[in-house]
Amino acid sequence: MHQPVGTPRPSIYYDYRVHAPWLPSAHGAQPRHPVVIAGAGPAGMVTALELARHGVPSVLLNSELQVSQGSRAIVFTRRSMEILQQVGVADRMTASGLPWRFGNSIYQGQTVFRMEAPHDADDRFFPMLNLQQQYLEEYLLDACAASPLIELRWGNKVVGVQQQADHARLTVDTPEGEYALEAGWLVAADGGRSDIRTMLGLKLEGASYEGFFVIADIRIDLPLPTERLAFFDPVWNPGNTILMHREPHGIWRVDYQLPPGEKPEDALRPESLKARIDAQLEMIGFGGTPWEMDWSSVYSARTLTLPDYVSGRVIFTGDAAHLLPIFGVRGANTAFQDAQSLGWHLAFVLKGLAGERLLANHSAERVGAAREIIDEAGKSTRFMTPPTRGFRVLRDAVLSLSRTQAFVRPLYHWRTSRPHEYTHSVLNSPGDDNALFTAGPAHGAPPRNIRLGVGDYLLDHLGGGFDLLYFTDAAAMPQPLQDVIAQVRAQGVPLRVTAIGAPAPVQGADQTLADADGHLRQRYGIGASGGAYLLRPDQHVCARWLTLDATRLQAAFRQALPQ
Image 1 (tube, rainbow, N blue to C red):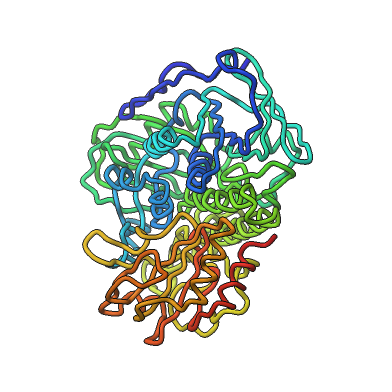
Image 2: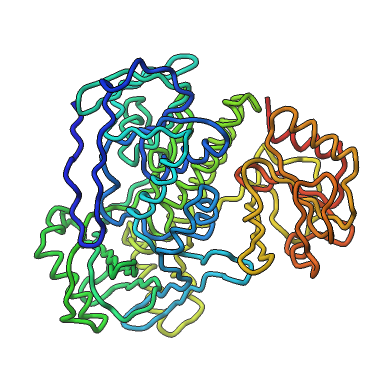
């Protein structure tokens, strides 16, 4: 029988709550559920919340009885916050987290590169927000508990999967024994060591790097700003790299690379942790400052992905689908994009709004995103942890030159996680005016947020289905366009029409947003004659026009919803 830990995890700043397990004896016969999600980490919970936004119920299985141990993912990007806004937890994240936008690369006591992430008045969220993963999971759990479409089962672990033509039959273990559970679709969000991936005999493709890093969360009072600190070739850890981040509640994350050949279990001994953290504090001028350990772990850099995220009736997401190095804050941030994509793709298939080809598109797009990240992150990983003597010679040359030569300093850039643009998606409309635009988000890109007023932004008004942004000064949309919109809605497709630019409500639009100074039009590359954008339910652009008529709009929906 599965026996998850039943005592609260230790922490000096977070109070863990132990939940009661869901036991089969307290419930009757189990019906077939449209979706079962194995794994209630960030990827699993955001998937459940996205499905619920589209009206699809799910059963969410958590093998544990409490949220994850340790801070784990701590840096969340602007796009992640926009996704979390859609599922209702961004405000709590903002209230608790520490925003930042600068990163420093330091060599021999000198800041040789300073990264500045873009931020302007149109951005609701900062480029980065630091917050420990336990709080993120707590907020997501509260959102799941508030949804009548999500059933969360604590202490339930999938130990068997049998696939049929139209469903998967699961064996689920609990503290009182096993039971059978059928799912139209099983979402495997069970993490980097995915048991489900192993059960199906699937292999990740890519590379693993030999270097190990220790993560240590310590409570300490340091009078330093919330900025990323990266130390290269420090005196106490020659040839290696140390990272530091401020976290809420007086916690600092210290990541340091281990010398070749050192075993992780040796590195995690209390005396080893203390000696190295003391050396780091001494190097930055705070030797002797008292500190207290909260949590420590070891990780290695891996750039791996499944070649296909759909295997029969099982769909993989998050770390179960890919393993990415944390350099550039790629883990949880990529998982949010996975979950947002999976939510609408799977919901539309289940509701009969598109054929199962749509799930193949989800896999193709997200595998493409993972491979792009692997390419980018691989560059950072090879710089942070050179895998061969040749890479180390090159890295050391950059370190040496960077003290006096500005031209090499951008090589320190850590290539921060960014939302993937589905430039070549089969859902993009081939007959639109994408190539004629000179500004604005292009095919496959997420939308650009725009500040409309005090505390009011464009993305606050979008989401939940397809969004048609129609730029016009007219009092009404042309009747043929209104007819197509009515036809699309009659098929059950959620579609919101937002008129932008008119001084009064526009007939045929669900809402009208003023743009008196033309700023929104300018940022979206729209001229005085008007234009339009069509956003998918994950808000990525699938069509844009300088002139839109009924025929072109119909064609865009046929392309975006293959049968």
